[in-house]
Length: 266
Image 1 (cartoon, rainbow, N blue to C red):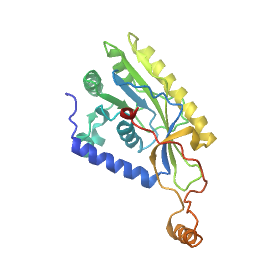
Image 2 (cartoon, rainbow, N blue to C red):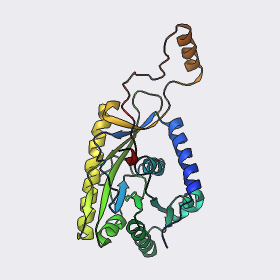
Image 3 (cartoon, helix red, strand yellow):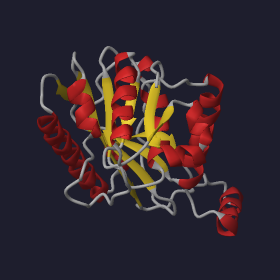
């Protein structure tokens, strides 16, 4: 399989759908201000994340557009699932047969071509939904095998994802990038250990930030929906208008941190 084709129109359309999904279903998408956001424009890059929810692929689509809009982005998906969600075939997602040597070889072949061509590969190496508190993380060997196989080395960047409820009716999507792992000349076993350790460290750091419940520790990637909604909120808006006061939909007033910008703005 060659590098998957990306339809620019379908990608633009789908990114709009994703932004709308997050606006409607979350209070906000927030990226830890302690994240490693160095520019990786000139590096062979793989981003890997924990996998706890159906929302994870949407997070990756959102981040790719926000942080690295000038690069092409790709991701593997179980072949059966890809047949069900066919639109993903048009935006850089490629099918992989799981639990077979043929599928493993297919992932290594396609993944190598993507990274070597300058594309960014996004993967969830747990290969299944797993609670964020589950230990050990239990990576499948494909990511480590791919990273170790790259002749000129590559950078592998850990991403921790959590979905939590804070003060609002809707949940928060919380994200944190860890320190990059640069793989060059390591064995598959050494690479696997490094990658699991790096993501675990990042997840623990994000867990502490989630427990602190402070939006100020995060930059806003995507705004969402605040307030109670329904007739009660309508009444509150009318009352604020009558009293000539600014309506505040948020349950708890916070000083909004600055939004995050893509690398083209830095």
